[in-house]
View (cartoon, rainbow, N blue to C red):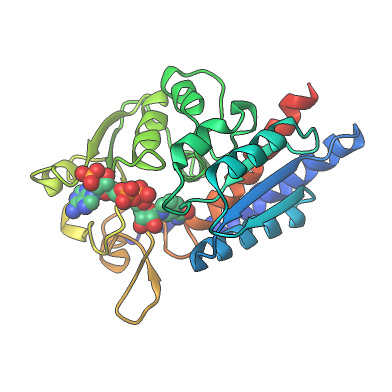
Length: 283
Ligand code: NAP
């Protein structure tokens, strides 16, 4: 078997066309969805991420503001900016790019964002909403994974999903989303004694670890769907995921590549969340 590759770029393009159309419809009612991206410091990777997010907004017709601050900005000044953005009617989504400089309490800053504008879905109110099945914003990366499953018409009901990784931004919300769609969910982590024994039982595997080759072909049940969230560098310095793509694609039925898989979907879901925030505010 050679797995079907789920193309995150193609799916993103399709979803962004839908976002652009909904944005135009909202603009016709006098509301332009707006995202504020706040970057503190000069972390090289963060600078690339925020540029990509702002550009994606512009390409889809959303308004976006990039606020850049020196790494020496005080936490209270950052909190004051977040409070001001909470009050700004032209801004529907606020994203504070992580990591923040060491002298700041990132969770405190995230909690300062109004839950109605928490388009990253990292606020405790958003986590609680996901946990209880209430309306709220879902973290973009696992939300993108759910869209990828939806794009192949995959019915999770009664399926066994194994999530590798339990971070607050990927693994845990991923597990809750899969559970909400009636999968039976197992969460694995660094203290899981026999990862292979778990993954071999899985109909769906989501790898969100940040280590190359965490998932190899011998760990995958034939026909399983494999989503690779990981972002690592191989020996040649090229971007790669957590999954041994070449090996696993011989066993799985569907697989996401790195690059061109979950990565572009993450930004797309940020646009979707921002648009959704603007639509909610308009209604
Ligand atoms: P993280 O906070 O470092 O969490 C990694 C998780 O992997 C932890 O729960 C850890 O377990 C678990 N783990 C570590 N070694 C393991 C092992 N050998 N077997 C099983 N589990 C193991 O990372 P994250 O923020 O969730 O991100 C995970 C990966 O996704 C990273 O490569 C990151 O760059 C990538 N990512 C990609 C996107 C995207 O848009 N494509 C977005 C976000 C993140 P413990 O909890 O026990 O330590």
